[in-house]
Length: 159
Image (cartoon, rainbow, N blue to C red):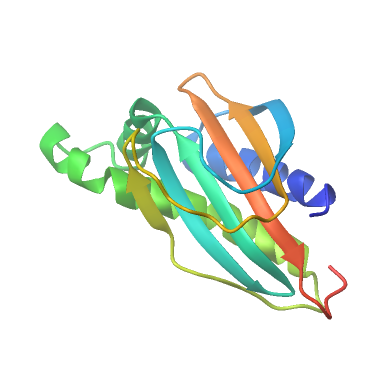
């Protein structure tokens, strides 16, 4: 796992959250882990294949996820909005990962993303493959966004 991957995800997350949601993110911490296991109750998992391969797992509190949905869909009634929270956070994670993958691929490589899968619950247990992971924590006024980046350059890739 290259540490440079972290900067690509930081800049992508900061840009997407500011542009799409008007939410300012700032870096809180960065640490290494053995797998992209999320630390907060709402998790969005995207697989990556191509020049790099692995998983990116976003994690946030339920209240932050609800705030994101409200910002994305301000005219929805609360009952309608609750049904759309997973869709909203999945789409934001997809935008951040998509922007980061374009930067990682450059002009010479191809990177594919799986559709986002959203999991909720504080007692949820998901087994992830062990892959060196960088865990980023980004702060906003609304809450913490955790990004777990467990990706490696493909065997023949130079990324």
